[in-house]
Length: 581
Ligand SMILES: Nc1ncnc2c1ncn2[C@@H]1O[C@H](COP(=O)(O)OP(=O)(O)OP(=O)(O)O)[C@@H](O)[C@H]1O
Ligand SMILES: [Mg+2]
Image (cartoon, rainbow, N blue to C red; front, side, top):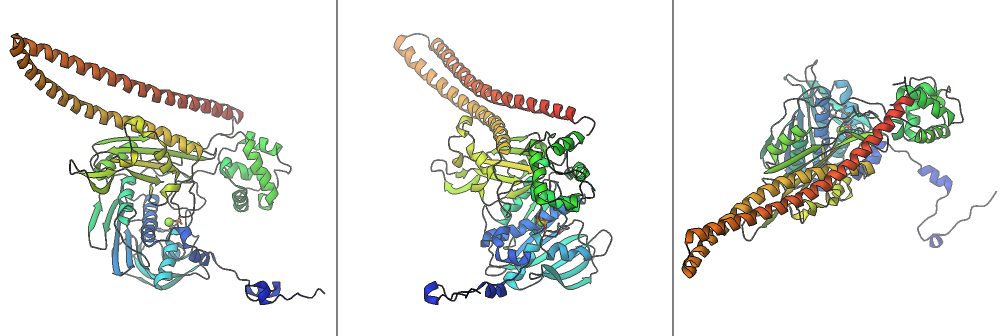
């Protein structure tokens, strides 16, 4: 037996040295709840201001998701009260489907539990950690439970007090009792410490303002800690078309996800699993895959090994699939965006554009919507005043959204901001974007948003997404600048005309005195010269405008050409897969 060599504390320099056996005694397991307790930054729950906004975001997103799933026009009330310094109570009440007594615990008191994972559907929630994370944060910072009132369409409402047991990642229901009250929906009241309410761009109020813009079908009522009430009335009277749940496309799947799905499938053979659980996997595609793998496709998918899953994923890469269906997407739509921006931002000029759905990474359907608002309440306040006019100087305001959820943090690392910053704004008459009184609205919707982290605050830059954003912004910028330039030109021209004509009259009088010629005739000639000059200027401006239009048209044509090619490929792929779809 090899004698264990003992190293003195001095030799080690870091205190006593532990053997593997001693370390084994230290070996512990911890629950997912404990993990997130130590890593709350992963849930976006860091920073006093950010944490408060994130809590509001989690509850409000859940309310909107739940209402839409149940076909209810959402009415959500949010109240934030200050209990003492950096200690607040948040109440969020909705008119949604509510939770049953049986699901309440798991929904709000267990991390990674919910109704939304692995659903290829455009929803706000994805992971099952939002609301339950808030329950845990409340316990962590105050030691208190949360209060819930829930009423469903079938049962009279009940009141519950509950929390989470982080060690077991299990809900702990402290009290539950029926109450005599007419109510359907869910109301949650929770207390939090180490948070702070502050007005500004990252505040709950701004979050709700943007939520109202992207969700014109929702009525949102907010009462801030000072008792000030803001109501965002709905500008759309119907719920958006419910997105359809689509199956995952093979090009968007990882080895790990394939194995997880294989374990849960009803299919008895790998071939039938691939055919029924994925989008666009017809007989031809299955045949192509089977040629590129070293094992039998009749094998039980539940017995699939990691190496075999790797082989399948590798073969997916070279297989010719039809692009994923885009039915899982539900855009806000140009008319609705226009109505809500007009009601909330009240701009002088507005251009809105919803692009057609397309695909990124070959496996995920997505779509972009942009709007540019100018004048009125567009832009954000700089706190400074123009010395000459005394009017407030405005700065550009970029509103980012993913699946109708406003993104207020991590703008620097987000593809949506980069797309806005990357546009050559000078081409559209904006010399310095930062100092322009503009509100730029950018929305990406997808069955799978490529977030850069679990905090879901920034989108990663996928090539196809960036290209769609560029084209959309280009078109919208052109449109708005045309309207602004048109109006400005008209005003300037009128002023110039007035001024020139005034001088023409005066010069005519002087010339009449000097030359003795008739004043009226001189004046008439002068007027003709002024009008000719103004016409010439107008012609030059029009030519310049046409040049820019031609450049944009050329870019769009290039894009249409690309699209045509894509369609051709798709058609030939359909032909190859004939009889399968
Ligand atoms: N207001 C509500 N009305 C009805 N059901 C709700 C409500 N809030 C939460 N739920 C249910 O509780 C589950 C868990 O919510 P939670 O916010 O923890 O996760 P999630 O929304 O599924 O995903 P994410 O972590 O991305 O938010 C939801 O999936 C939903 O089924
Ligand atoms: Mg959620």
